[in-house]
Amino acid sequence: MAFIHRTTMAPTKLELLTGWLPKQSWYTGDAGAPELVRAGGFRLDDPEGEVGIEFMVVVDTAGQAPVAYLVPMGYRGAALEDVPAEGLIGTSEHGVLGTRWIYDGVHDPVVMGQLRALLRGEATPQHQSESDTPDPTVTVHGTVPVGGPEVGIHRVLRPTEAARTSSGHLVAGWTWPDGTAARGVFAAVAPR
Figure (tube, helix red, strand yellow):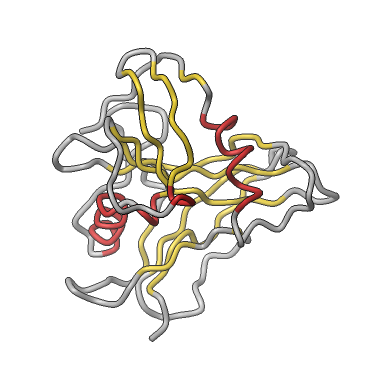
């Protein structure tokens, strides 16, 4: 079970994402800096208790219309080896745990392993900001067998409950800046 600390991080996750997000190929904003707000997400527990796992939704309000992005993140107490430069979102000083290396979850084997476990029905999604509190709003449709196909992350979120595939997919919610609730596919089995 992950414990959520009520403490500071410097720089904050949003500050790190503001610099990192525009460098990603899937970012749809213009050349200016994004204006990010937290909009939702959930956590997964690392069975070993070493890696913090968060699936964070941020909304960029800098453009004409807000855009919701999903950023899975792995928080670690030491650097990962053999991760490409774009896989590291940055480092931050956590008020309780010290220096944390924050990775884009698609480059973190523990994050992706737990996402597959969730899609197999072997992990329970947790509330984003409450310790030991399941999040029943995160739903899995279909299943992914052990050793099954790859899972793809939907980086730019669109409101919908259905995936383009009948195989396993994960649906969760976020809130637009005007307070409107939305749900969409966060991850799905990649087509073969």
